[in-house]
Image (cartoon, rainbow, N blue to C red; front, side, top):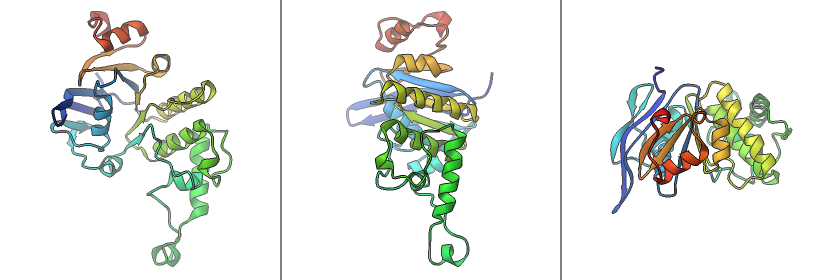
Length: 257
């Protein structure tokens, strides 16, 4: 069996008397889209936050390429090649598309202008931004100098996905990427998710939209009561059965385990 690129083993996270993660496990294989589903309070957000450095688990370990890693901040995870597209997108609406793609990683001009005067290479960032947008097949955005606040919801999501794909060298995590989007924009974002996988990056997709999950996921991780309840093949199980496992209405069938 292919070795997982990212693993979580026995993660525990407590918030006072509330246990958000109660020994959670996760395995992400190279080149796959792993969907993570679960009811409200199942621990999906805490699990993802632990993987991207937003929270530090109380117990357990995270392994990247089989090597234990420790993320104290999201910057640590980004340095390790794990990029996250949060539901809130974390874009700066008043800045242009290129500036958002390079937010926190701005390119500086060569020579004294960059090293001493700290001047930004805006043209270089816009050229690179255009390449990243084109590589993902994002044809609805033609001007990287356009302010993000003028974009539609789907276009803003595309900018966030392009940023993750540009800098994520190991893993891309997407938290509810189609939430609050219309049918057409959701379709475009799902195509982007598939494009990211085609570029060789494994994707963790958190979603409540079961049709979207079953359309793009290679495997489905079902989270329940702070733990991994099952990992199922979406081709061998129905959406209704997956929801039943997620809510505890049925046990995991042997053929789907």
